[in-house]
Length: 322
Ligand code: KG4
Ligand code: ZN
Image (cartoon, rainbow, N blue to C red; front, side, top):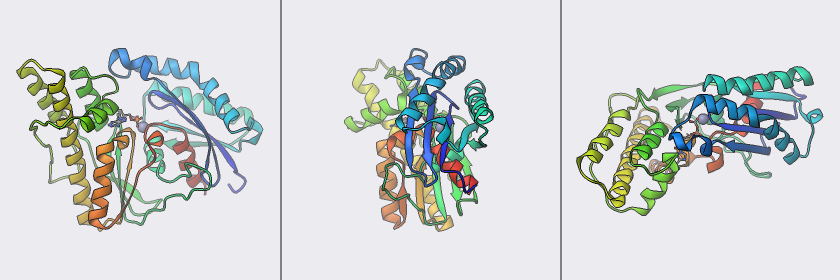
């Protein structure tokens, strides 16, 4: 599809309504994200019915805003890309029906995108004009850590990649959010615990679910361990901070252990991060250090492109149609 110069991409798989316009060089012309944190905060978690309703209310406005930001109209758009799976059924439906309607009305091709592939492609786009796109040396590992997923990918090339290991229970972002809720620290727990950890020096000992024989992960036992420590005595705010920081330490150590195992076993040349938890400062620092010590490359998207966004959907679409 050589004639495709600009793609309008839509992302509504979870609780972020997003529309981006991206050019054929994967330069982001516009990327508008409407988060629903305020809607779900009082429930300490995402309520699927509310998420889909808010997507429906916001989607048209978000698309208009992206067009205004990109200084273009529907006439300038050559294709529509949309996340079709995986995600919350009602949320996905809003994006998919909107994209299908646009594709039909504008007579432009529709490109269906897997949300997890899009997260990986958040590493491969031009975040700002006149910047270079990161090019990994293969084989590479990509750790996709979000509210719904904890997947470690092995990437042999841009077209040959598969999951080496995944969580057997809670996703790592989900564990952050549940610990945040348990300790009453705020929602979503991930960014709050990230900040608290950086400001807290004390630590307590928690079990480390390494599961060394496999690339799979398990975080529900760690979450239960946090609950058990919490139930033992009356907690001050400082105690809560120490427990939250200790939880984050263990999470980062477990994630790193799996990456180290992969680097050793497969002669990995590049490690990458993606997904909301890839915004975590301690994880980013630890991955940089691991790459340096292993003398390999590392990359992660700027923070706004770690969490859900439509630009990564557009970037994946561009490479898919090439
Ligand atoms: O990728 P994402 O926006 O949505 C999903 O596809 O799930 O990820 C959201 C998750 C939430 O669980 C949130 O707590 C977590 O990413 N998160 C973080 C940080 N920022 C967001 N977790 C740890 N540290 C952060 N700085
Ligand atoms: Zn996501």
